[in-house]
Image (cartoon, rainbow, N blue to C red; front, side, top):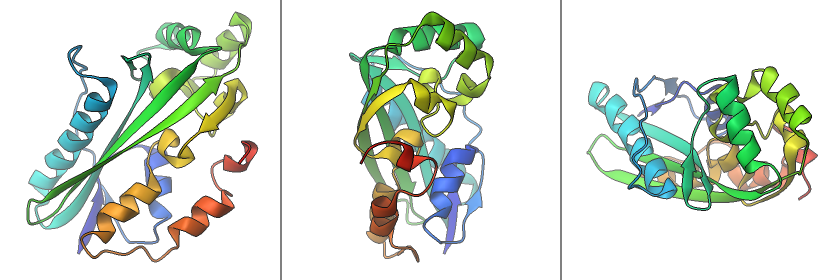
Length: 209
């Protein structure tokens, strides 16, 4: 059975590869436009499904996994920054506050059956200065990240604590993906619970357990 990850995100590709299953990467070719009437969770689910369906239409013989991540700041949806100035605006909103990283996963199967999972991870940001944010934004790291920061990169210096699924907050909830595939009889060759227990990937161990 072909397995396709409908994403060009290097972070999702790295996390997905931990399953130990052969897979392909196909860009969904979708431009995300948020709708104000949708909640952050609804946005994440909507775009995860749209990405998976877009690729499934081109590859109907495959199991296709789509995913989307947004930030929920007091019911306000925050996505990726448009430029450095926008990254500063987003980071200034998040600094010193707690927000929720919402990541949805959609699986589309060859029989047209669809399954969805969603994970919410709470992240507390440190109360850092504007100068620190300016230096971080200038690195370019925020540019393709929801919330304009990277948990596994230099952005981790802005984070005080994490509560929930770390891999989901990085971009793909591996445990949930394994569960969706398992419901259709596709089992990972690697033990997912061991991965979560060891936490020895993507700077996970730099955060307290």
